[in-house]
Image (cartoon, rainbow, N blue to C red):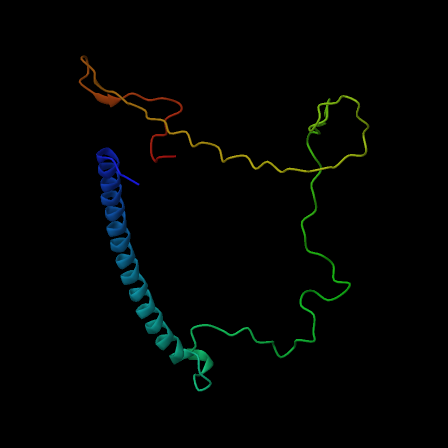
Length: 164
């Protein structure tokens, strides 16, 4: 089998391209190996720190975390005793009722529908607090040309003293 000059050049270019890819992969592999080594070192350091608090001789007050151990009263159920009256807030009466209906099926679009019941959902809208109105009164000062008395203009809504 004979190889033409153009095929030879093409193969040569492919080999060069593949060698570049191999070099990039080797470099990437080395970087990842360094990261793995650093993480392994960090894991060992953390294991040593954890061993200080995870041994039978460490008092519970010095432990950084609590083990998932069963409590002393594990046979006793948690929560309120049977017959205990609930402490939830009663649902208030609605101020308005909105009927939410459908004219067609959500999935197929059919209008042949049969009502099967009503699900009530009460939403309590909490209105935002009212905006505080801040009013600036520009009270002009005057001087009487006749009696030379100086005074400041007055307004009914503007308090003479204070800010409120």
